[in-house]
Structures are given as structure tokens and as C-alpha cells.
Image (spheres, rainbow, N blue to C red):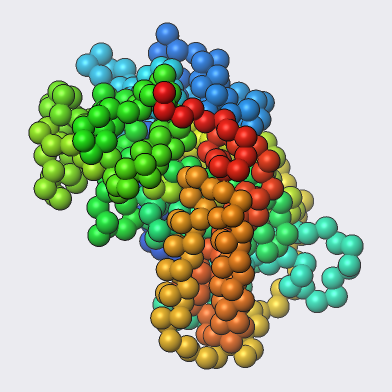
Length: 524
Ligand SMILES: Cc1cc2nc3c(=O)[nH]c(=O)nc-3n(C[C@H](O)[C@H](O)[C@H](O)COP(=O)(O)OP(=O)(O)OC[C@H]3O[C@@H](n4cnc5c(N)ncnc54)[C@H](O)[C@@H]3O)c2cc1C
């Protein structure tokens, strides 16, 4: 297959890019590849909404300031300003593409408030904003004649010089497309592209407890790393403080931060409110602080969950804003108007990833990255709630603009060899893969979680090395499968998270190591 633009992933980042380039170049071929169906993505699960300055008592400056505070000194201020200023235009495009957002009785956008935000500025559609965005973007994409969607195709690796014969030794790296596995017939196809975009989303599945769907296995970051792209800030994993505690369920269902914005109060199992003793902003302090406060209480008390108390919130208002959350709780026997909701932190968002410039360009020629798999500099050490959908949109658009400038100058006439599957014929017991995946989840959960230590990181690395050797051994002999590729990718990303953590010398934002200087308020 040969295309002009190849996009891997159909979340908000991938589809925004697709719509922008396909509309600009109706005569060029755009291909979207997804290892699942259209809507298998983090985007589809987003609840709270998109942070966009709207009201007169708010300003870009205040949103910038909140983002910089959450990022704890590591944000790139120029990028923060650029992204936040693009907010209203992003909203305009999304609305024009058919996304619905809730309005108030005056016809203005209804604005939610989330942790770390000084103002109400989160536009949303009930508590299923992501599903609504995904629905509208897929519908828009389907209207574009030059776009083809290839579902159930797992992208295995980027094609760069090291796959080509007779490459000059001093060549700078360029991306020429990808190898992808057809999950239905097991064939591996070569997709040649002039421009390739990684929009592969998050990494949450590396952890045992996560809000991320099954597709979030860090494939894009691992592929980019193998192709020697620059990766940054992977030690900053954001744990959402309030995932519904329901051990039977994976991924964990999220109780949006907007519920605390609407007045929800965290309580220990004996009913005590505790968030304000960790930070003056109490229940609405940034996520890293609230997650650590909960983690500290759980460890101190030997308990597995705390409660979120919403019993005092107006029933009608709750039902109107959070129908999905209310129904989910009812499904497992919790009436939020009379009972507290059991919650615990879960891995939620990766702040770092594939390093990109302000146009979404990676360190590899003709390879762009946008959305959660990329590291733009917006989030620093900790993402401010509801900034990620905005970031994904803005960088997808910037990448599309830059791609349209480059495309006509790219020579796509390169010989690419087919995937070499020599020697990979064995079909071992699948259980070898699932056992290693379970072990990886335990390692990351126990040793590389909300609170880390030098010793825990060393333990994690030692165990990861064993998993790496076993999995590489399987990969060399085994008939390739999505499960094996995902395991391999997750081990690579886990290794990066641990080594980036070991290199960090100061606690900051979402990163906390008990052996480093304290920068976290203990309870007063
Ligand atoms: C429960 C939940 C609630 C959230 N709420 C909010 C919120 O309210 N506001 C906010 O701003 N952010 C929120 N986030 C974060 C936000 O949803 C994500 O950061 C954002 O949607 C990421 O978009 P994306 O396009 O980068 O990736 P995704 O939407 O995750 O899409 C990635 C795509 O890549 C595909 N893919 C991955 N690997 C491969 C491969 N090897 N081959 C082929 N395809 C592949 C996947 O199948 C998927 O389609 C939330 C996240 C979760 C999990």
C-alpha cells in the first residue's frame, strides 16, 4: 500500500489531523490505521471535557498560570501560551464538525470546574464528552472521499533507514511508513507513506489499575523509541485520584474530577474529610497532590479505598451533569444520593512521550506525533485536568499545517523490503504472554506507582530485564500476534519509565520518590 499521509490511531489527535489534511488536499490519499475499531481509544472515554477560556471573568493568562502551577516548573511556557490561545478556535472547529456541548439557560456553554483550575472553563457534553467528540469526528471523517480507514490492523514498527539495504552509515533517520499486522488473517503488510503520524495514545495498561482502555499499551512510544526518536519526561505518570473501586472491573471506571468540582468530598472509610489537611485547595488541589494524599491515607490505614461523598449535591443537578456516573454507580448497587462512592487512584495519563517541536515534528524526518503519545512541553511534570483533549487538537492541527508544507517536496520512490518473518513459526502457549503481562502489571503497580523509592526502582528494573529477555526470545521465534507485540511495547515503555525515574534528582509534579528531597505537604 502506498499513501501520502498515514495516521496511526483514531482518537481526537489522529482524526483532527486526518480531517485537516484531507480537506486541504482532496486529491491526496489519507489512510487511518487502528488496531481496534473506530472508537477504541482514550478519547472515547473522556468525561470531564475540554478546558477552554470562555467567561469574561476568566482570561488566557489565568489558564496559563493554572497550567504552569500544575506542571510544577517544568512546562514550556511558550507552548502553554500557544495551546491555550488556540482554545476558542478549537472549540469553533469541533462545533462546526458536529460536536455537541452542553449550554446553560442563556445559551452560553455550560462550564465545569476541575482540580487545579481557578475558574469554570471546561466545556463538556454531559459526562461523556469524549464519546461525543469521537462520534462526530468519525462521522466527519467518513464524509471525506480521500480517507480510508483500516481497522483491526496492528502497527508493529516504523520503517526507517535501518530496514533498507545499502543505507549510508551517516544517514539521518527518516520514516517511510510502517509494517502492520492484519489481525484477521495474520498477514503483515507494508504501508509506504510520505508522512507518518503517530497518534497512538496512552500507556495506562502497563499498570494493574488504570482508567485506560485495552488499546492503551504505549505502542507508538515504543515504536518511536526503537526507531531512535527522542523521548522525554516519561517518569511523569498521572494517577487519577478517583477511579471507582470495583476490583472485578478492568479498566477502572472513572469518577470525573468534575464531580469534586461540583462539591464532592473525599472521606476516609471512617467518614473523615482529609484533603484540606494536605493542601489548602483541599478536594480541588491538582491531581498529583490529591492522589498522593489518598495513597498516604490508604497506606497509613491499610485500606484499599476511600470514599467520595456526593450525598449533599443537588440530585437533579447531579443527574443532569453526570448521568453516566450516576447510572454506573447504580449498576453496582450504589445510590450516590444516599451512599458514598468507593474510590482509589489509578494510572490515567502519561505526561511525557515522543518529543516534538511546536509543529508536532519528531526527531525523525517525516514522522509526526500528536496527542497523548507525544511530549509537547504543555504538561511539564503534571497535566492540568482537561488540557489533554485541547493539546491533542492543537498539535494535530499544527502537524497538519506543517505536513501540508512538506508533502510536495517528499520523494516517496524508495524501495522498501517486505517484513521478514523467517524463523517465526512457533506457536507457543499463549499463557506465556499473559503471565508476563500480569507480572509486568504487578511490577509497575508495586514499584513504579504514585510513591517510588530508589530501592523499588532497582527492583523493578531487575525484574523488567528478565521479562525483556524472555519476551525478546519469544518474539524471535513466535508467530507474531498483537498480544506479543503489545507485551514487547509495554516492557519497552516500562523500562523507559523506570530509567527516566532513576535519572530524576528532584521530586516534582507527578513524580515522588521518598529518597529525594521532600516537596510534598504531609498532613498538618
Ligand atoms: C477515562 C478517561 C477520562 C478522560 N477524561 C478527559 C477529559 O475529560 N479531558 C481531557 O482533556 N482528557 C481526558 N482524558 C485524557 C484524554 O482522553 C486522552 O489524553 C486523549 O483522548 C488522547 O487522545 P489521542 O488521540 O492522543 O489517543 P487515543 O484517543 O487513545 O487514540 C489512540 C488510538 O491509537 C490506536 N493505536 C494504538 N496503538 C496502535 C497500534 N499499534 N496500531 C494501530 N493503532 C494503534 C488506538 O486503538 C486508538 O484508536 C481522559 C482519559 C481517560 C482514560
